[in-house]
Length: 67
Image (cartoon, one colour):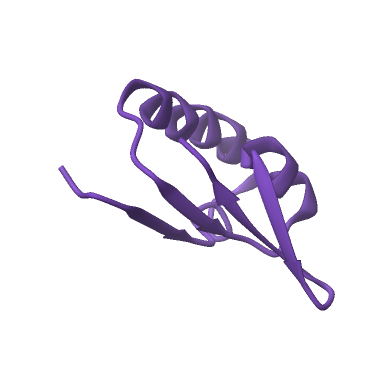
């Protein structure tokens, strides 16, 4: 098992119909196996859904999940 996990735009290339289900799956995995995770995104809604701590640079949203 990795010590840390970096997810760089993991849902960007996923179609809208599948994005919600895939996001739910990722969240359930991270809750089941809490690995410190950094998730990078430009999607503000995705940041709010996944993030416990959100770090924003300029006009782009980047976030850190604290598990």
